[in-house]
Length: 262
Length: 262
DNA sequence: CAGCTTATGTGCGACAACACACAGAGCGAT
DNA sequence: ATCGCTCTGTGTGTTGTCGCACATAAGCTG
Image (tube, rainbow over all chains, first blue to last red; front, side, top):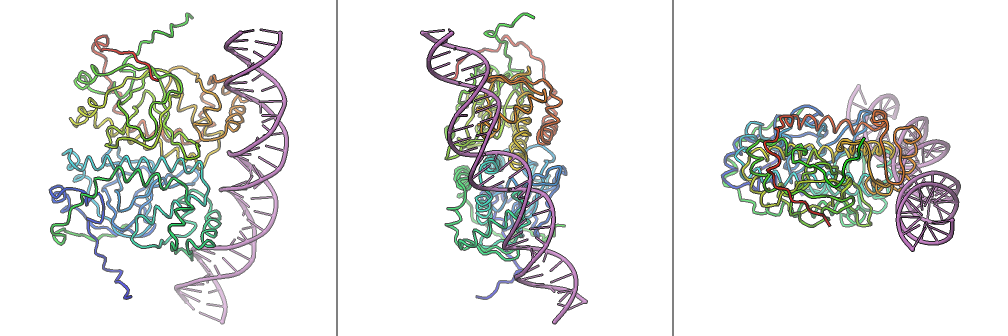
């Protein structure tokens, strides 16, 4: 098959489930203010304690939210991809959070400047309802992460992590070193090595110098702890109304500014 | 000192910080629909998957939110006392959550039936803003729990847990067995025994058959992990506007129905 | 007080994850 | 080809928590 040109993606706001679920009139108000942003791997979207200037709606990128301890240890508590948005703080009223956000899989996101977010939010319409539902799904994911951290092995958590990531991508490979995964899960690099080896020996994934390919997704789900399924089901319930996704009226009319992040 | 009559508490909606922060006109709309409920120790407020009929505003009670795994293991991810409310699900749009709520310290709470909650919420006024802020503080607590579960020892987590509980009480003692704490923290009872022994030997607490007394709170904070402080500070920032607490106009006018739960 | 129930303390082997140290492997650059 | 860097694999000993078994203690009931 011919290789696609990597320099010319065709991002579309509708690729983000939340944006796609908005009604045409809301879309027509918001979309003109969207900016397309490229998020390179490992980019720091925001640091603990700083305030965000935009809300980000990923299309094919994945961003992780992590808490960092005083001694430098960290743990990711949340994964955000095309199913959600980054920056609920802007809605919730707080100016910042004690977390930081790191791009876990490079890609694109649309972003909306703070003033437009607030303005639309204050209309108390569809966007508000969407955000509330999404926030609840988010809480479920964070809570399940807490439980998972308590009760499950590194092996299981790696499976869960891979699944969470795969669900937000359209292909079956990830670009991240074991060291990086270690930071995400809050475990040592060697622990990830061991777990990844087992998965390789089982023929579930292949792993080479930062490139992971998922070969047997069913088995991956099988090896994962229940946490993955619980969150997935709960999220499905909360965001069921999303399928009323509209078709785009005229996607080319949406002004698009390509930016680079840091 | 003369013992107070335990049968005649003088609960007041203003003891709950969220209710107290509402403006007089919102209070006058909501308070007539409040019911006073006594929450006995270990009462199940709601079970995973069921839908709540009320929102609860604790005054001197403490309720824990826990996730239960398939194998029966559980972990508490959140503590709710007079600083908050139980049942954000009702606001957020989901009908239920995969968690269950257990009374961790007996006491009272005011509850508001679902229809009145929704009605007031749909006014998009002060209650909405309050709930959003509180929800963000809640997310912070859950997230920090996830981090804590990953990185800190049982000893530290016990300290954190005791502090969280003490902050929501007006006295310095708790009624809960080590077995019960074990369920909360998601660890074995023996682990709690060991940790509690250390604290006793240090003269920080005394523990006897389900009755814990905190003797040296400063030392308890010292022994706890940073997670406690992080959440406390963040919550303080998010709920700073709360001190605009109003004085009660005429507390006796508020209809009070004393109920029993299960 | 005898006997029961519940709560707490203790001992021991198993195991997962840790910290640290180091060995090889892959890949690009000079 | 060689160097150097990054990423991955491996070994050893330590520690925290678990699972289980059992001993003691404190309070309730009759």
